[in-house]
Length: 411
Image (cartoon, rainbow, N blue to C red; front, side, top):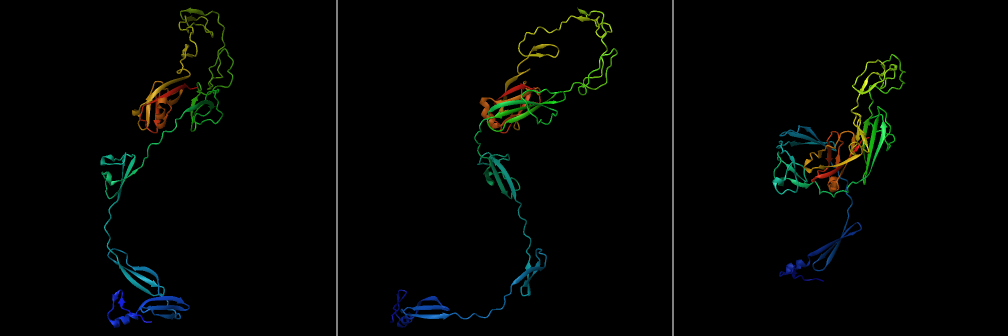
């Protein structure tokens, strides 16, 4: 059945011959696979269609082998600017070819690159905010300026120090233990058994004191003190029994603390009675005790002792009452760590109650200063100079601190 075409894309076709050509024109085509080839269906404008089968042909003969590149090597030239280098191409079939490369001139030297660091207490907003002292904010400049830029906007800023953390729990002393041990060394801590009572220490040995302070948290704090029991005279104590007295006597030559080979002259009995209180006279008799000497009246004898409690001697035969905290027991006093006196996280406090020898010390903050003392992490050195003690801190406190000091007499 034939269909008359009167329009093309919606427009009328007035020419009868043209309308007849359009009527037989193909409008679409479809391709489908079939065994051994493809089937092509062509649809025409008049509604008719035509099918054509296209079958696959046989494979052709293999082509000649291809030629690939095996290597490229530089065969002449040194790469210098403005010169020409020659390169040789070797193909996999054994043939070769060449090509040349003209080397360009050396480029200009690049600019030097610099890095500068600056700091600020807070994120800077003006040039005067920045400096060279490390602080909470750090600025980094990276560029070609050979000197550090002075404008804060030339730096990229980073906060490197966070906010201050919470104050930790205060340290509270739970117990204090003082123990003793004798040793032959004054530099190596003894490894024997420690005792809470002072042992008998012979001359030439050392008395070690170990003080252990236990807090409510953390490990106990332990420190040591050592005292030397000196040997009197020259040499070590003698071990032999001294010779029996003789009439002639001998001074002895042994170098022991007690010359065990010396002899006293035999005590020849005197014939007179020594005179008592009067004008002093040393006498002239040759007896061991001169019976003709006279004792002066004793005007320096010790008065009657009326003091009670602990007594002390003055080294010259006198006796008086001992003072607690000075001659025995402990003395407590307070000192002030001034906030303005810290230098390089340390300050030395002067006080007449500090003695370099004969005493041990325990320091602790007063209640009103406890939090600031703990936050500053303060500790003290041993007293090495009369009248002063040095303190150290990790964080410098901003307030004056009151510190309690207990001084105890060392054994």
